[in-house]
Amino acid sequence: MSVRCDGFVFDLDGTVYLGEAALPGSVEGIAELRRRGKRVLFVSNKPLEPRTKYAAKLTRLGIPTPPEDVITSGYVLGHHLAHHQPELRYYVIGEAALRAELRGHGLTILEELADQDPREVIDPTGIDAVIVAFDRTLDYRKLNTAYQALVRGAYFYATNGDKTCPMPGGAIPDAGGTIAALEVMTGRKLQLLAGKPSTLTMQVALERLGLPAERCMMVGDRLETDIAMGQNAGMLTAVALSGVSTRADVARMTTPPTFAIECLSELPMLVE
Image 1 (cartoon, rainbow, N blue to C red):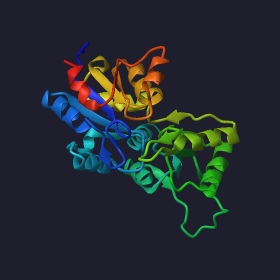
Image 2: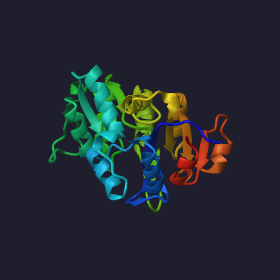
Image 3: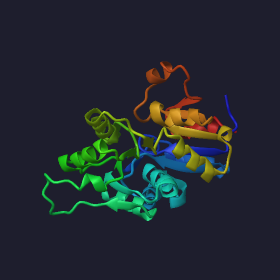
Image 4: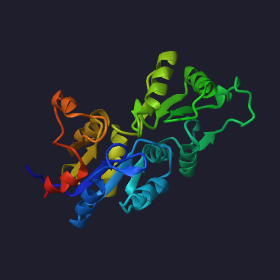
């Protein structure tokens, strides 16, 4: 079976590459799609680096990519908040690159002092919204600051909700656990999720592609985020079995993806 498809949105970790190595077939598959005039974008839920770094990494791995063809959950959130709540003061559980990304959208990001007593928190009454992200520097002070702000009514946002992040040698904890901890402690639910499977991410992607959803395909390794987002947007979908999902997982789905592939070099044979 082959389908008409003119635009592709690729997840990165576990789909295009793993760690510092391109996954088998990804360089060749994407190159062939581009040779045939297909439009290609890349989407990552990881807000750990600016888009320029992801573009540079793809280029280094043999997939030449300009920064404007990369969309991160941090970029999507910053873009959305700059248009809807630019006046708020934000506290971020996240790393330096994300804070810089959000400032780049003109947002006010509150900072802790390097020499601050770890038992102290930023005055929670000065925090209008808490943003939770993948943060390898997470500590008790950050968690407590977010908690104190949320119980006082601050908005509760997140870049992404992934439970884990795939890495060479095994997955590591991601933002999902931090979100869950704050939900349990505060009795509140997350109010806005920017990354996959949020419609916000796909709105930005489809706008960038300039194509209707039915002529585009979402390609990723996670059924609950990548594939769900593509299906919700009305796109074709392909799950890459190079990451976290297996054929057994696909078989259990009520609405499976359009395709299940072992590697990206299979894609050109499946589309017109």
